[in-house]
Amino acid sequence: HLGTDVLQTIVKKIREKIIRLGGEIYFDTKLESLYLNGNQIVGIHTNKQDFSTDSVILCTGHSASDTYETLLAQGVEITQKDFAIGVRVEHPQTLIDQSTYGKHYGHPALKASSYQLTAKTSVNRGVYSFCMCPGGVVIPASTEQNCLAVNGMSYSMRAGKNANSAILVQIPRSDFDQGYPLDGFQFQKKLEQLGYHEGFAAPAQNIKDYLKQTPSDKLVIQTSYPRNTIMKDMHAFFSDEVNQAMEEGMKQFDKKIHGWIENGIMVGLETRSSSPIKILRNDNGCSSTIQGLYPCGEGAGYAGGIVSSAVDGIKQAENYIAHLNR
Image 1 (cartoon, rainbow, N blue to C red):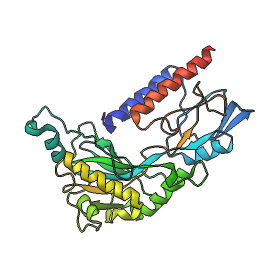
Image 2 (cartoon, rainbow, N blue to C red):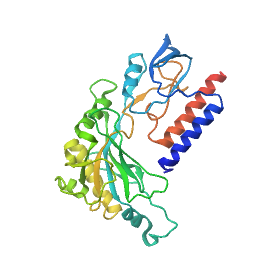
Image 3 (cartoon, rainbow, N blue to C red):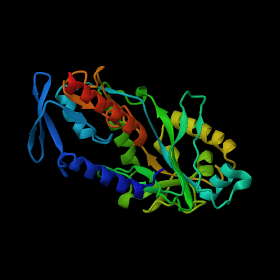
């Protein structure tokens, strides 16, 4: 974790370098449609102005469902893909540090530690931690009205009292496939609507109470979530298979980090860890159906996080350079 505070500075410096090299940045400018000549891009239409171009590197985030609706209608080939849903969990950072460092716990040279957990389950759904944030904060991350989604972040000092992480369960296409490429977005939205409460209050539960299938009276630790929480049994949000996988996974995690169940809380819902769609590409990195369109990163279904998105960005930049040199 670089820290969200450091990342803000890095992104600003990247933008400044782009401008120094002759690039232009257009804030509050939204792609609304492509201009096509047959299956070749010849320009784009935005909410501010039109641009003539034969190439577009498409780097949308994975929540831009309206953009995918537009692209699908214009002939861009989009397919469903498996993704994952779950919750954020929080624990005292001291618990994680003691488990990680053992007898060296408390040494002044050691920062707040992280963990990575995976589990196989009897229902053939993997359960795993994702985007673990040592000394971090759980934050609201909704992009639509009357919907709730949460995420996690850490500042560079990792100085918060709690560690948090997404705990996710694999969601195969068979859970949501109704025959439309964007069905995964509707699956996400229904779950986020179910989890929404006024003021973006988040459903919450002690992990030990979740395993007993009973709502909590009071959380065992104070959550870092900046809005209110409402005590709910998290079973209400997920299918029986997802709940069974989550329960089995959590019991396995407790064997790796002693006290993980007894001292942990769940704050929901984590629905945006990865994209439920993939924009198909050919060997040159272009859309399989639209020449000049280079789908890239998390939103296109080729990455899941900052580092993998950056790697895919480099790959697509190389593909575009190869196109220029042909």
